[in-house]
Length: 124
Image (cartoon, rainbow, N blue to C red; front, side, top):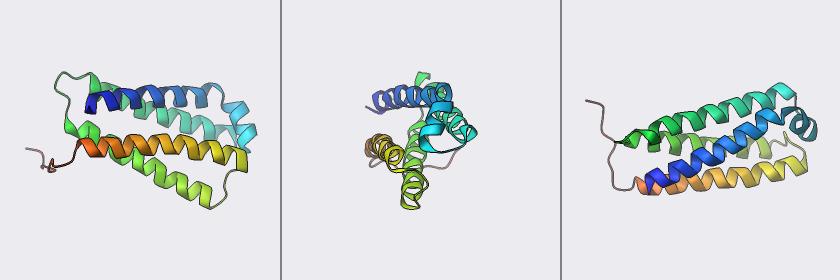
């Protein structure tokens, strides 16, 4: 289940990150943001997808990959709450941002669920 969720996260993050990068000028105009902001967000989302992809492709996938995904995804949601609450986006882009963040949050919660009962152990 962990591996399947991480693969889905890789696919979703890759699609979003690539869309942000390729469509950054148009998305930036629509969201009333500087193009560089959308471009940087896209690159960071693609980096997140790359980290997950490297982890999920290992034969003996480490739980640390899932822990990273949980922290990154729930961190994104927390950031989204701040962005929307402070009104940093116009209404339509904010609505889309909330929907995308809802998917990210769902990934985070489901990934955390797969870790239930597993204690965090210090590295040896």
